Length: 172
Image (cartoon, rainbow, N blue to C red; front, side, top):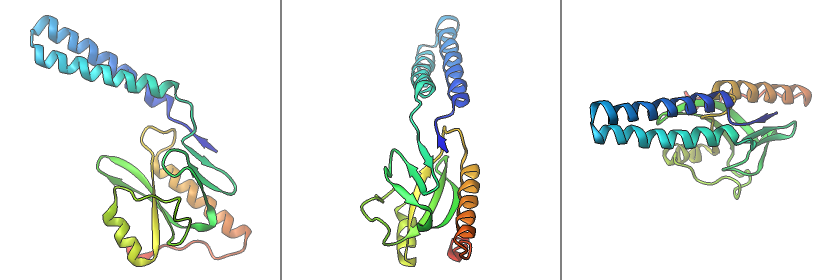
């Protein structure tokens, strides 16, 4: 399965940019508030750039295969399903993230430090390593991605006739 940026969200952002541009023009023309009008116009410009860029960006962001999961932009390497101990989603600073907990010695060159250094220190003390996947603007949200990852992990465990991955108790 290949996850791209969402076209629906890109269209909504582009329409919002057009509306902000129109509102900025009306504020400049009718109300004659120059500062507020130009703030709306500048916001509209950046919103249109992001929306149109997202609309035409068809690069894959997350690739799920039978062997593992690959996040193209930050990790750039495949994480095998066997290495994932736990997967969940969380909300941090205005965005939803997917957290994958891996064994602490799993491909150390692959996993770079993230903004979540407080979490990383906690996980390090417990002998695991965390990988964070941002899902903002993608075709699939964090809850759906976590459900899919968990379903794949349980299927992998059933095929290999292992115990299904358990929950790590210190997270809750």
